[in-house]
Amino acid sequence: MKIEVVENVMQYNKEEADINRRLFKANKVFVINILSAPGAGKTTLIMETIRRLGDKYNIGVIEGDISSTHDSEKIKSLTDDVVQINTGGTCHLNASMVAKAVEKIDIKKLDILFIENVGNLICPVGFDLGESSRLLLSSVSEGDDKPVKYPKAFVKTDLVILNKTDMLPYSDFNDDFFSGKIKELNPEIEIIRLSCKSGQGVQGWIDWIENNI
Ligand SMILES: Nc1nc2c(ncn2[C@@H]2O[C@H](COP(=O)(O)OP(=O)(O)OP(=O)(O)O)[C@@H](O)[C@H]2O)c(=O)[nH]1
Ligand SMILES: [Mg+2]
Image (cartoon, rainbow, N blue to C red; front, top):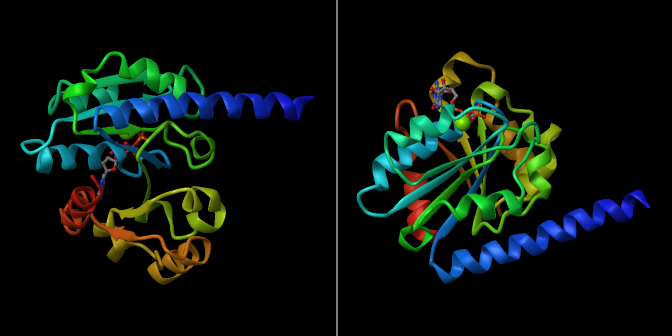
């Protein structure tokens, strides 16, 4: 009985995600769902991307957090097209929350929509939001063992970014171990290494967007 309820929830989410996907496609919006642990740099990466691509594309942002408008206020300094979802304790976004948030944005005028998921490497993984691509953002300060401990997050993604590479000289992060584990889990996946702080490698991410949009 319990299993049936869980399946129903996931089936409902899938149907809602498909509706979102059709809406995004009809409006030619490239939607990127960003997953990471808390503090890996999702908001910083979104802001850096808007700084670099904001003159060329109309970029909107849906900010997912358990509470507060802290991140959306930062984004607001760069674009008006930002909507905050406060999940009120739920540890991930779902497709219905995104559908409601999208009603508050002029989706027709957007080229790119970032969805910053709730910082968490477990719960958001199973919830399709209707995105075009999923990005798993990891960072040097979290350690090199995240692919071992949270494997599903590294399997169900279209791209992995390793952020905060400016911290490599001050840490014992082993990139061979990190990338080796990811390749075992997801042999075809691309890994982009960058630092939002120094700017090193960020162009690789910008190129990835422009090649996939
Ligand atoms: N050293 C260094 N710090 C960074 C880098 N990118 C982001 N940070 C810092 O990391 C901290 C967290 O960054 P955020 O962008 O808020 O991270 P987040 O993933 O959005 O965090 P949550 O929304 O709380 O999950 C901030 O103090 C950033 O300035 C980087 O490349 N290098
Ligand atoms: Mg954030």
